[in-house]
Image: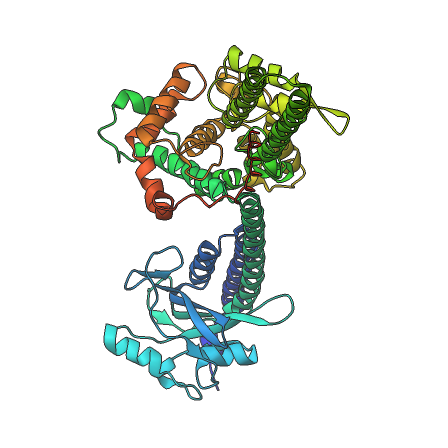
Length: 580
């Protein structure tokens, strides 16, 4: 019979049971706490993923967060494209490797074909998650790839979890593969715990949605950029003489912003430190550069409403055609009328018995009058070309010519129409004040049109920047007569580069291209007059923006202006009547 004295007392058993229950409760509590923490972390990751629209950064975040979440040493993300799995991100902590995404390191591994023998492809085909404790002791899949990688690098692939990424429609868009889970206490490789499977699947689903959203966001940006490009091209191509203006202004604006960034990076040590003070710590981010680019592309949007014959007006009388040809024909008719009148008078003088001396004197007076008409026509043809300045004498001569009348078939007709006379007395250039106002109104229309576009937050200043490219620091610009700091830096940049491009353009019908050194003199004068920003002009010159533009648009240095439409040949002047 056993001795009851050998049995542990009841109190001791109770304490042991109590200790065991306490241990179990602690483990359950720790598990619950860990699970709660993981779910909370999963929620945080989802929020972080949903707020990121840069696809490269997003893909990196997905792998990084999944590895941290599951304590994985390595991870690979594939995207399903062209009926195969394309490597997008590859990370390995043991080798400190980061490839793909924003790393700058290209992944040169070939895409994975969609074959069920490959575990990643299997997950993509079936939509199933695969959890493998040891790839060297697993059946059903071909692990030739991981083993070759191990042989080449000395790595030891062991545990693996492969999770398909499904979008909201249930379609697989990619695969997340994690490798070598580690025990946080021993740092040894262990199988991926089952608790991670469902959580990782949830993370993969969130990642798939985030990737889909990022793609949609990127596609929307590309669509908007294409729309902007098409609009800008349409504006440029309306006239064969201004093609490329918008592209060059946008490129120059970006070059100026990048030059300011380079200043802060110390790329131009030859520029004095005191000069750097103006732009110190002024840096344009990627988004701000994009905003500047769009403002450059859109700065002349309102010109789409400006009549082409005004944009291209190279002669004062030009509309759809150059009306100087009509004036020439009219003057030939005036000369013919004078000659016919003389013939009738000469016959009358001969019949009346006038002396040859009288007839010769009368004919000389007619020839002098006809010579004056021809000289007036030559003057009007010259005045039609426009120029920097038309003096009072020339203006009065046009008006005196316009006041004359001739009779044809009993109808009194002026030498010049009111419109012709009004245009020919333009003192500077080729535009009437009403036409100049219409040209200037393009910026008002630009602002009005841009205000109707629901720009994103990142592009919120496009209208303000584009709408300021004709403002002057001294307040004499248009349309709002802004002055000084009222004009944003980006607007000042666009004003400078727009002015430069207009002066150097070879393809304007109303002026010749001006050499760069002469352009710099003109721009310096505008700085001194308080119109252009002097610091920006110095930066433009000292950083060689002109040469950079030439490299971007090499054809602009050699291309000839497009040929103008041939003007109608003038009507032949009637020959003088033979003397009798």
